[in-house]
Image 1: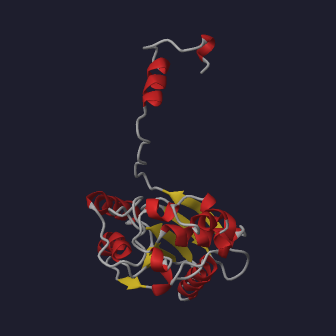
Image 2: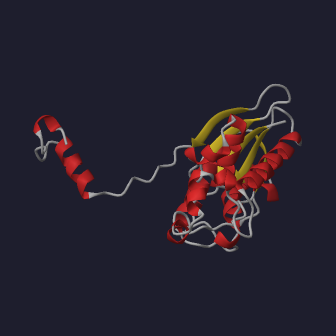
Length: 231
């Protein structure tokens, strides 16, 4: 059994706009390419013994810079692939939000089966089994990088923390982030950390008039609306 680094793919133009799923031709955008290179540079001195990846382009492209630096192959693993979203694949977030099943996705994902796709429990079972098989193929002290997707990694975290599947979306897995999972031969599994960004910058929230005004007040540029600075 091995120590696994679960790494989400870097940014692409579908991110935050449309459900990419298993659509072909979804590649990293310029920011994603840069972050994948930065990630590789941050990890290059670690004793990574093997690299596995979801077969989708965006994960393969995120894994390749690290593989190049370490002179290792990227081994495709179908079990690490994105959830099969079926008929929802390619839809925009606005389109999905108008669907009756959207509430089920958000509030009771354990009951959700994507039309023409798989359920969250099926996806969780698939991904956990894939990681167990990868781990079993390596020595216990080996460090292995596994490149996958946001919901896939969150489902793994929920499984090994004993969280109800309906709560799996309470964790965050950002692009190019790392989650550390150890699967020892003896004793319970252990999650060392979740959503580590390795020095990559988080995007700042968009500016709003209220935030700009509040920031000016903090800097002493304008008076507060109420005595004592209360708002």
